[in-house]
Image (cartoon, rainbow, N blue to C red; front, side, top):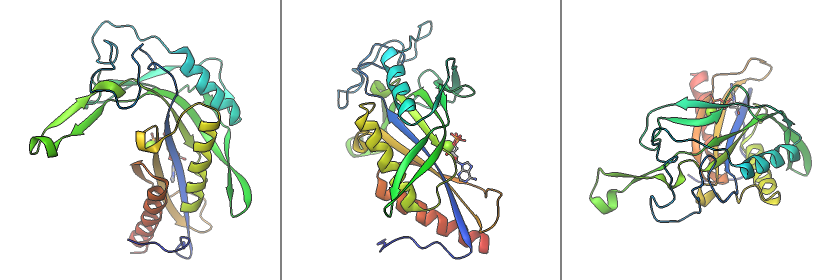
Length: 252
Ligand code: ADP
Ligand code: MG
């Protein structure tokens, strides 16, 4: 599916895009345990009783993770809250041995702020809703090639790795703008030494929320969420294709 030149918005329509980025914080140990989380270690070699979800353990917050998260918040002009709260987000999946993820929900450590972007020689800012800290899930490896099909392995090395989730307001309107936002954010994360933000290592992952509305409408349309996109080019192409799909559905 070749795409030539800039994306052309179907006439009479406006797209609304909000991005959620997960970035892995550059700490030596995990968010709530002393296990290391270096990339590429042998499966299940970087875990403690906290990461494998044994009962009766005590998660202890990693001070360095907080320092890096706050550094990012200050750089983006966010409001850092003196008090924030970790919450349990419950769901069942093999990559989540505890049965819940420790995240921030009602009281994130920071809100507001913005990411500066440059597009067609012009600077503008994309406002943020919030940034919060949370732990990563483990990794399921669908090992069909080795086993001949149907077997999934669980590698707990990533379980509990420290993340920030950076949530933009729904104020991005084109695939190119989304691309510029992501490239700028990655550059800032690296410059601040907050994250290596290497997409190929899963240290920078993006979900794109997309809706469309008739030009002039002020109410937001119904969104879909494109999950776990791992290249900037794919994000732009996925958004473009989703905009076209939604307009087709609504016009039909
Ligand atoms: P959830 O966990 O339900 O996805 P979040 O608050 O983490 O909720 O993220 C919601 C994201 O979706 C934000 O980036 C926000 O800007 C965006 N969003 C919300 N409503 C719309 C909409 N109607 N169209 C496009 N993006 C939207
Ligand atoms: Mg979402």
